[in-house]
Image 1 (cartoon, rainbow, N blue to C red):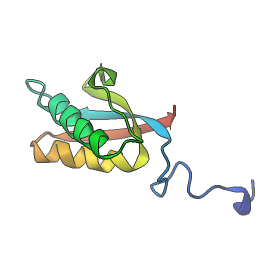
Image 2 (spheres, rainbow, N blue to C red; image 1 turned 120 degrees about the horizontal axis):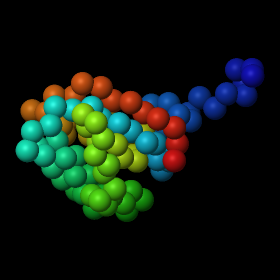
Image 3 (tube, rainbow, N blue to C red; image 1 turned 180 degrees about the vertical axis):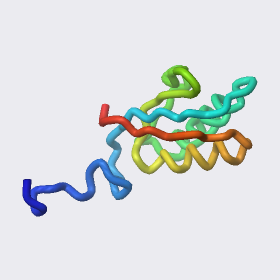
Length: 98
């Protein structure tokens, strides 16, 4: 594949599309504070941006964290929302497009 064939805006931090990615957040959870922070932030965000709809039931509990589908640009914002609630974030893994 040549450089001119690569889409440098897709699957990168420069992706401002509505495409969703499966994202895993490994967090230090206690009394569902992390889940509350993720849900509260994304509910508020979905009210401000009609192109993004968030259903709290879509957050999947997995070992040591949560998995959910997000647009690329919301990933760092979720990390910031977790940090504001003093939730330790150990890793964030972006999987493929959904």
